[in-house]
Amino acid sequence: MAIYNPASLKAEEFINHEEIEATLAYAEANKNNVELIDQILEKARPVKNGNGCTCAGLTHREASVLLACEIPEKIQRMYEIAEEIKLAFYGNRIVLFAPLYLSNYCVNGCVYCPYHAKNRHIPRKKLTQEEVRAEVIALQDMGHKRLAIEAGEDPKNNPIEYILDCIHTIYSVHHKNGDIRRVNVNIAATTVENYRKLKEAGIGTYILFQETYHKKSYEQLHPTGPKHDYDYHTEAMDRAMEGGIDDVGLGVLFGLEMYKYEFAGLLMHAEHLEAVHGVGPHTISVPRVKRADDIDPDMFDNGIDDETFTKIAACIRLAVPYTGMIISTRESEQVRQRMLQVGISQVSGASRTSVGGYTEEIRPTDTEQFDVSDQRTLDEVVRWLMESDHIPSFCTACYREGRTGDRFMALCKNGQILNCCHPNALMTLAEYLEDYASEETKQVGYAMIDRELNKIPKEKVRQIAAENIAAIRSSNRRDFRF
Image 1 (cartoon, rainbow, N blue to C red):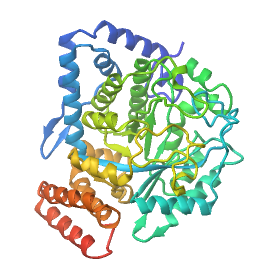
Image 2: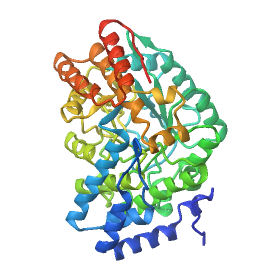
Image 3: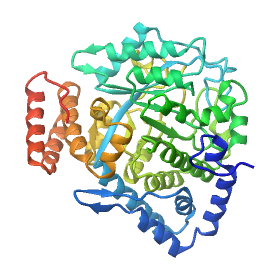
Image 4: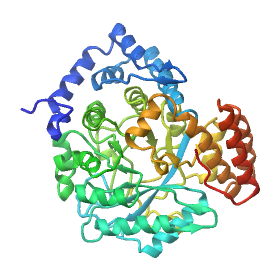
């Protein structure tokens, strides 16, 4: 029997089945232990420290107790603290991005994904470099600055060289005032050498969803293909960081396995990264199984309702306070609105999950990886965020100023990252308003910028930000950053 060890490099030891089972039993036994729950909630609260705040975070056991708790007023307190934490470290900013699907060729047999090798309904497609360029221009014309590229696992059709060529093409496209300033990468687990190549290509975050941390379920859900190897997949983040990638993003696909098990495994993975590399996950995503071609989510009997989903997000924010939390267009406008109040800090906008989908006038669905629930335009999403008192941010400055990995976390943990991120968000919002926004969105946006400029505490920073925004409005000067 493997022994739980968060500092181990072996998957069965840092994601330890026996430890998760013991954690779930402990949580169940204490789900109505008001004294313990209050202690955990108090530990989770942000504490002011000089000019910033600090947060202790929670262990996977402590957070699992909160997730199991059924006391309404305590659940409400979780939500309140989650919002406090998010505002303390990320302010009222919400980072925007879009996925870009490069290829749906895949050799794996994942039973929850329409890209699985046996699916004969779905047309297979791989973008040429010229098609990548066209997709990028379409995304730039919306106003996007940050992409997450996606591709199925297929050594023949999607080798690392193809991914690297696509990254180079994306960065090379300069269209009107548009640039993609950061490419995050969501591709299959690979080797240290290939991660080193991705780092050299200038990627931002490497993202890999675990799908499920339950090893037996994982192997059943991935019956064929290289993804069947649970250990190789689960240990991928360690190889990525060994290859020099500073920022990695975790996530599970909620609905495949019992959510309490997944939640504990996810937090154990975060604890493992902190124990081994000194820095936890840069992002945590919270997708749910959705309908797609050849995929019926009702075939999975572990689906979670919206309230449970909200509770999971809040508990992740309490446990891993400094991570960026992502919710995609898999979810409806209503669900996304609620999740913004419990810790989400990044959202996708105007996503198309088909290969080549952005250049099509009518949204194509024949090669979608999942049904898109929130189908609003980027302009509508930007205006929605502002009307909800969130600053839409297209900022990528930290990546390009070297504030990644432990350097980013150090600034975040002492609250100093706000001095950069708040003015950067306002300047990138001004770029969007000038270059892409509708008149209605423009009016709402500049009113927000005027309000938010006054909240910048340092007079010199406020003055520079205001001057830069004036330059954006009066000329084609772009890409100011702190």
